[in-house]
Image (cartoon, rainbow, N blue to C red; front, side, top):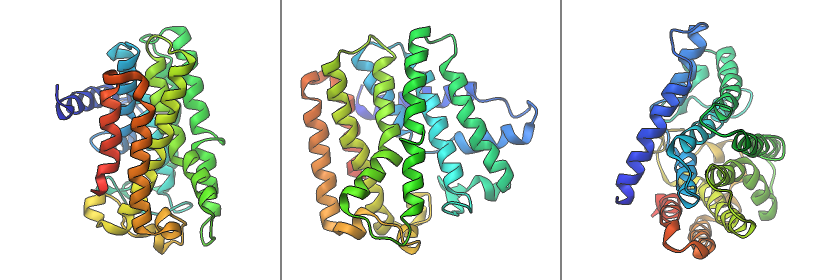
Length: 293
């Protein structure tokens, strides 16, 4: 398959898995389940599920196992977006090209949607499709990546940084936690869903994930100042308006573009030990960075 065909195939699988793993709209409490499905289904780049599937190809993971891991990752990601958009955090009204959950429904529902999606992710990871040892390792990866030393911790730093100037190392630390931790988990979970990779392979995958995770955020910072809201699917220019430190505000637009290109090269270099078997991961690194080409 071409990369486009592979991507389309994986996205179709992931969408079906999410539809099946989410409670039906008719199940009580119906409003909450409707809002959960509104937040998750039919939108987003699904970068984390794509990374999960691509990494799983390296270790011979069964597609059904990767579907479960990918669905859990996306549920955690979407829960973070729902909470991030609320008035107590970024107070945004547009996400994935449609009204945010608290705008479409209400703040209390949005809070519960995030809480329920977080719980549902771990319900998915403990389904019978995964062996008990896989369940334990994947639950640990996802819990760590989404906690205070990962995504939530990064968000806390982000909120505390509004109106302040961060050094470049401080900004990198924040983004490796807020964005990079879940992207790293996507790669590791995909690999761990198959035959357990050895220590050297995991180190290479971690190096790849670190580069891609940071590149993703650098590119997001670039797009925030170079792209309109309709294209982004969320409010453009909001970081600058809210006084948030970004790569563009700290090192400038041209240097940010150069950094994204360097991180792509770093990601490719990390995959060298795998040879042609890592083709999809390499193509995903290109996809992340080429959003600003």
